[in-house]
Length: 289
Image (cartoon, one colour):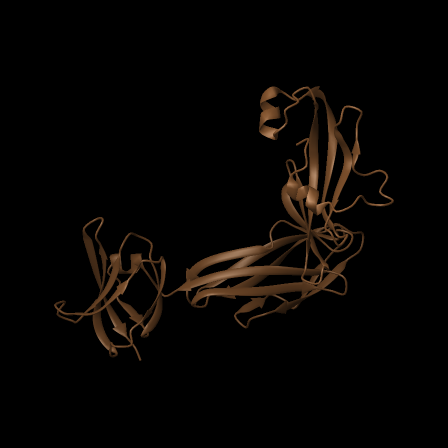
């Protein structure tokens, strides 16, 4: 805690001119007040705020901090902000971490809007609709209006325009219709000075292990996504007499794209084989064109 790591030293390329009240030390060698680190291009990387403590650091703490001098004084980190930029070095958001409040994000040049999460990840059956509600807080004394921009037709919002009253919180809701396999989307709320990007990762599957274990009758196209939720190693397709194996698919990965090019449309038995538990389950499946 007393010694900047090599990475921090490289990032702090120079001392800020005119920042006389930042990066200060006490007579006991403690960090005090606001400390700012910069990227080599001059943009802010991290801002932290320290308060000196009256006690000295213990020998155990000294070892954990990599400090050999155990008589140095202790300092307390009250909060920190990490600045995140776009590819053109335009400020994207600030990631702020405060004790008791946890991690949240600030958007706008003057921290106009606060929210706790802007990255989302879903695992759902294809065709299901996932509804997501996000609380945004307006930190200003004036109302803020934002409009939505959506990267995909399977994402919808309750309204194209989102209004935030002064010094208040409101909930923004959007819906995602799940598509097959891995998909990445961006939903943006913005005005002339503020841009909030919601990153959405969604994995969609058609059939999962439980469907077969429960013996459900399934209907599928020749190409589908299988999601493994137990320890089965193989997926097998049998004829209606359960005597001839027509296709065998390895389930080495948890998510597998199955493409039944050699199987004609019709009625079959679908089976999973779990060698570790010495179990095999069957269900009927109709393969469509």
